[in-house]
Length: 292
Image (cartoon, rainbow, N blue to C red; front, top):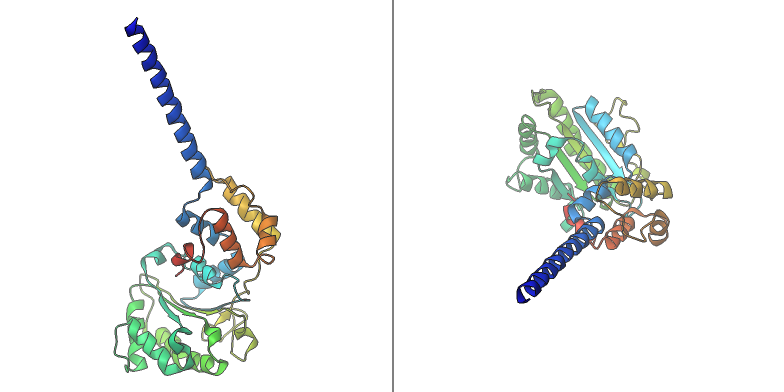
């Protein structure tokens, strides 16, 4: 009798363990369907809108070895995320480090001499190095890899300083590359992105190209279509895209209508934060660390 009871107990214990195992796996599956990993969520956010700008930049770099762009729009409209999106247009760019300067940092954009010093530090050159030596370093790098220059918050600069900087730095660099840096087997590119976080540069007297076919391009930057708030259709399309992914589930309560209501009618950076909040993450304190 004891043996029979022991067997029954063993069977019950085994069944309980099996049920518990199934239950735990179900919880894990449910959790994984809701809690999108932060790195995946960042990649998904990169896919939200900006198709017009990405398509134009892709077309330009297919036709031009040298290119310059103004990324601009109203505050908090995702200018920096767009730059990240553009930085993924070529797979090999993941292996290079762009030359980034935030011109609002330590007053770098208040004078041209400060900007030259910032560039010199990127190439580990003395602060008082001649500009031609910096340009030589850029051309030298261009022989083997793409060179991408990103100047953030150019709206911090006065139009006078920004215009003078483009004339003193960018225009001579373009001329030097065209004359002295022949196309190599690597088909390298020289690209510059000016990032305007307030939408003020287009309203200034800075010379900008409206079309990349203009004869002055790329000596003067091409202003891209401005970034703006996301509409209901954009948010709907993004939610549909995520929902269609296997093993992916949009958190309960996250709809395009709710996003629009909680983000001042679709202001991009508010949208990113709201989505992150629904997914158990933080934008400013978390995912934004992956912005270049």
